[in-house]
Length: 204
Image (spheres, rainbow, N blue to C red):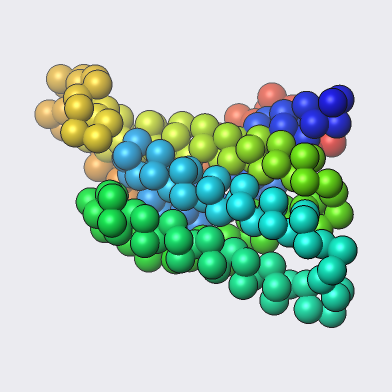
């Protein structure tokens, strides 16, 4: 039980994939222009991460070492295809907004790293907890980045068509640079510096 709790908590703060391990930065930079995108990408990536960890943990003893990476990629690609089809069928607007970054989950280094470094060596229970913790860590990091970029870039916050907050002055003259790629790098860089300043690290 102690290990399950440790595996879960690690991915949220101490081994946060974006702010500490610097994994999964591609979607963090590309789709973090709105809270809608952040939640959609989090759900998709966590589904794939959880499914891949479970399957790999179950069959890990039967996978020859020489072909483990190709096997991992096939498993991940299958799960990504399922997610992509589900989004197209039930959330077409979100699927269009996320675009190519859903199929690109196949090569998301966060998921492949968890498969290779953890699920291929640990039990199903520990792999599930690690996947959930990592997914939550990825999710809150991506949501924080999206919140900052959307708020400063548009002067307001909305979630799936519902207005949450508007800052009148900022809404009239938003800092639209935050919606551009350079704005994403700026926000992520500041947050990385903040975590470094706070002393949060994978060795903590």
